[in-house]
Image 1 (spheres, helix red, strand yellow):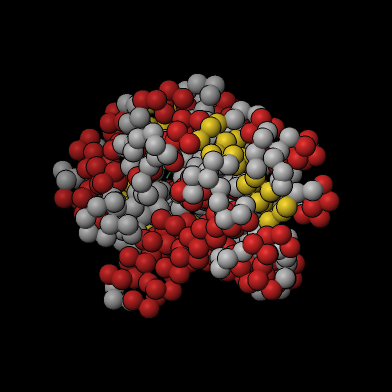
Image 2 (cartoon, rainbow, N blue to C red):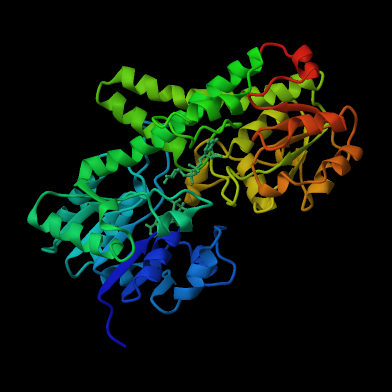
Length: 484
Ligand code: UDX
Ligand code: ADP
């Protein structure tokens, strides 16, 4: 067999590194792709039939390439030393302590990866930033590398990832664009062209955008901030719809028809979640503050504030509708992942809603088709921002999690419940036998739809008291509301 035309090593076998490298391996059979991670368990899972992340279409891609030109390993240093291009796709959590706590990115993992690259490298390398990092990280990384380089040349590129979970394979196979930022020097441009030639195997040239390093880094933060801003905008309107009797879906449809606005990311919900949106906005806020731009920082902070408002508004609706108390009442939580088609629960709105209900002493039974019980218990016992510090996790005891039960069957979850909260838009929740569910619930039976997926009129006809985000309120709910 001919030797590989290029050797790639990706540090970090997570939601970004795993699928992205699998797609590169699929599309470039002549390129050797190694994915390395310090987590033995994660690498073992990538090498098994039970991949560590649930992503539609991923296992087919991995199966096609694993052992051919796609390898998963914990032999980090050897494989980094041996490659031409290193992608760095490690976690960049929000700092929990010290300067910038609660906003700034914690670059501990990134820095230690950079130091390791510098230590083990014996040949020139292209180092590609793949994880979302604050603007000008590349400059810092460049310094770490060049000061430890022993004569070896490193070219830094920023190649932000725009895939969304649940559609990662589709997004990688047919991206809207690929963005590559590099230095405007001969070496920088050569590196840009090397990476460009990898993507050009399957992405049309006009979709591969090249920019300066800073522009590429900032584009990632700005894209996520603007996407999240659309959701907070429509969620803000949803509160007004509920107060005035308009229907947020009708409003979103009408405004989305304006081609200048477009229909995407206007779906009102219980709030956005996921590993990127909140983290990236907080990062943007911190960068603005550091640059003395307090008005700009304040502007973006509001996107997160409205999201927090939407989550707490939902929990308050549930409590106030059920005679202002849920103490001792069974409430079924349908869906815990931050969106459908993923088992990921990072920053999922379900965590805040569950905390809100548990704070009023509800008894929760949680069902999600992809999220395992231990993960839910861990999420509900963690402090804010701890989720992205996997190597320093500590749980806060069983007091909260003793009030939750886990169901493996959706009908069991709802049996005997006073209320149901739909928190993830899984397709299966659209087609449940709601009559059967209603018949087995306490009466009055409440249905709180945080994703606007049930047909409200049909449910009301069945006997449910229904609350659906941004829709005209059920007369029952309306009468019982106290200042949401
Ligand atoms: C996001 C970006 O879309 C992606 O480009 C980036 O690389 C990473 O962050 P992801 O977090 O995986 O991707 O999912 P996304 O589809 O953007 O959804 C984020 C959250 O917004 C989810 O909780 C989703 O339910 C919510 N959402 C999305 C809405 O509430 N309404 C919408 O209209 C769209
Ligand atoms: P993302 O969603 O950005 O892909 P994840 O948290 O899913 O983030 O993945 C990041 C991965 O990076 C984790 O599996 C973690 O173990 C790994 N990682 C962090 N630091 C290092 C390091 N220095 N060397 C190798 N792997 C690392």
